[in-house]
Image (cartoon, rainbow, N blue to C red; front, side, top):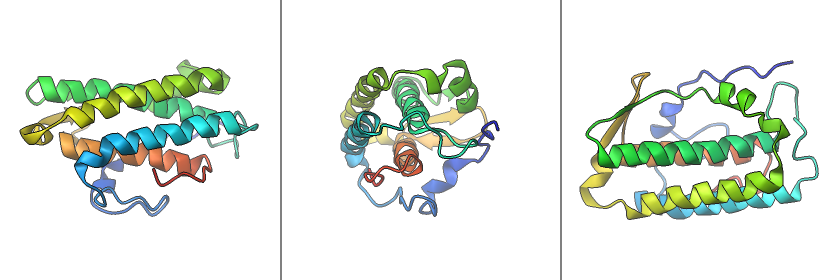
Length: 178
């Protein structure tokens, strides 16, 4: 059975807590995002090293912990690029990303967890540093996805952090709160 593509518009997590993972994107200061990204990455590194079944899908229609880890690594990379666009260009537009196509094309399930973990940590550090450097009016700068979603740097940070936290929950980590 193939994985059913996720077509939800997850921007609703900016308005209410996630009923699946319990994470509330309004429950922390925006300046905490960098530290939250680093803590989340550390939990992923631990999960990828500790789980002997890291490649096993819990169900045929769900990603394995390794596949989720690859996705989170790529989310961190993509969001670093988008954050840079938001901070350097006026009101940029960036393409919506098809995570399911990327998972297939990049063969997430076949990647080496010993490589994915440090790559995820490095991508997280780069993104966390970029959020840590944001100050003053930069938090109100805007960017847009081609599907119509509009973000400020602050809402972008809050939207972002839910993703890796939620996926730790999906992967069954005891560190799912970020």
